[in-house]
Length: 438
Image 1 (spheres, rainbow, N blue to C red):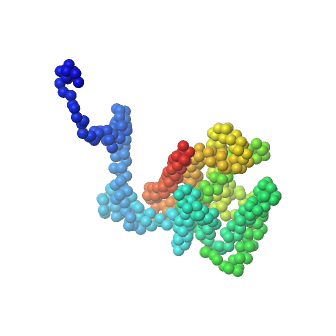
Image 2: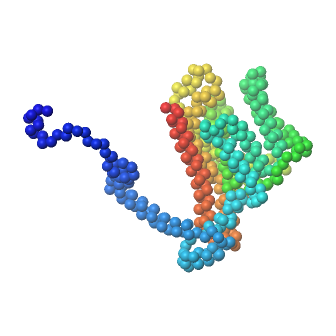
Image 3: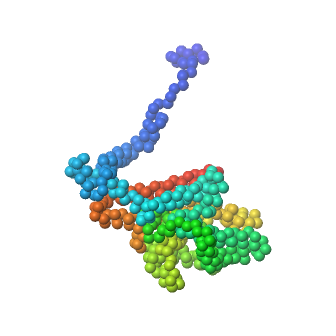
């Protein structure tokens, strides 16, 4: 340092300052609040307004919910207990209706001594979907996934075990044709036989074979009629079946709509436009009232199965359009790359095109699934007792006539858990695929 500079600067530090923590306003929650809630006068105004709305809502909702009555056998007793504990003008929830009627809301009129069957079926369903949803689950559990639909049907509806086993044999026949006959007779003929032969087997051989096996070795559970199923058991059966079945059908319809083959293209277009152009409630009435007119006389087609078919077709039409959007978003170079590799149509779709298109379509597909699950409440209009229908029947009883919010809060919370879980898994899958394709 020169002498001139030393005379003009009064003090120069010749040692380093000790390391210090940043100011409290620049770290942690304080920083987040300053940046997100109080960053401008408009943000401050909106924050204060939001806090007032939240306070106004919770100040009424929390006392009503937390002081609720759980130990009463009817609404009159519930109101008497509320007046005794909190005063005559107290407004409290009567959760006792849930404590008494929750089995009805969850299982419908399923026999009480058989509740273990739908519970076991639900656990089996979770085990079956785990390897599909999460790649960290061992792949060997996919055998459970393949057999789960038949076991779930047997557990819920009961009857002979040989029926589901005989139905599985149809898929085994189809697999054997595709595996062993395709190299000899060609791909097209093997695909046709793999579809036609199992259908003929299921129509003419499956039933007598199951009856014959049941007469030799009876393995059966107590049958439960569809009319005894209701509540969230009914909503879950219809919703899950529609979701599982509509996804592959929607993908096929999307591919069919983009096909260069005239008949397949026009059939796919007509199917999608007709199905999605009519409200779901109309299709449910069609399944309930008109479908039997097109079946052979004496045919007893289960109403829930008819509803599942209509819900599946309706959802598949929407999913087809979502997937078609994903296919259209892919650059033409991806199709040309598949052709350059010498792949046939199905291999190019399976290995290159569909993985990318489905990745793009995940938000739309999950959105369609959520809408489908919530639309299961429409079955109340054709006589099936979904949770909304059961709540009406509960409120129609003399014991609980006048209860509204408690039942609807419970039903809404259960639907929210299902739909929110699907939404969170969608976000998890989007982040996972985005990370794997950097």
